[in-house]
Length: 65
Image (cartoon, rainbow, N blue to C red; front, side, top):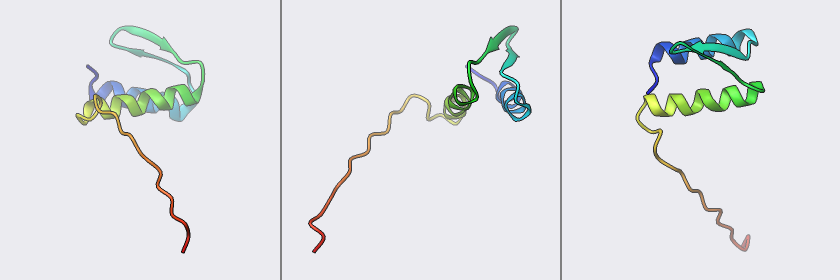
């Protein structure tokens, strides 16, 4: 489980362009900014309680009439 403080550290590092951050006594290094953003979104979902849900979307089309 992640805390709001850990999430903020990750966001601060991302804003500075830093790809390494220490969370819960463990140094984590991301390979890219996009990987870091994806992890931030995952943590935000976990903290807000929506981390275990999957969203499925279906595209619908019509004939255009």
